[in-house]
Image (cartoon, one colour):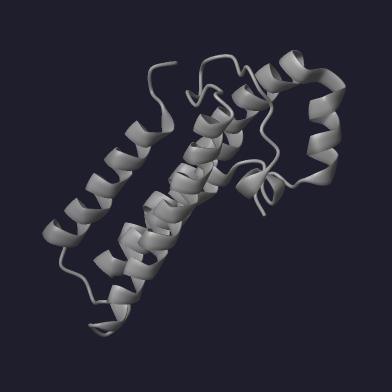
Amino acid sequence: MTWFIPPYLVAILITVCVTIRLTIDSIPLLPPPYNLAGLFFILAGVALLLMAARRFKAVRTNIHTFRDPNRLVTTGPFAVTRNPMYLGFLIVLTGVAIVCNTALGFVVVPIFFIAANWWYIPFEEARTAEQFGSEYQAYRERVRRWI
């Protein structure tokens, strides 16, 4: 399933969260308008995604999850987390769950975390280790996977 890139999963999970909110009657977790605080998370996640994507573009490297990397990016947000894009998606999904304001809507957050942590990231790490060897190993030792 190398066509099922992370943005597709995020779009599906956002749709699931919104659908849950619109179709299942539940008690709100936060009294409105406090759930709108989720917009801050959405904006922060998108900002992190854009910073990471711009960094990839600046060094002219591949951004696609299932294609071989051609440059090791270790600066910008990549100096703080090895996976700023996955972290950005996770923050966006958390924000969407807060805005949707239903406990069941939060199911999307661990689903994405599991997919990223045990499918997408291991795939990318194996390919990157093959491509960059000891340089990538040194980077892994100095920068955490998430935060």
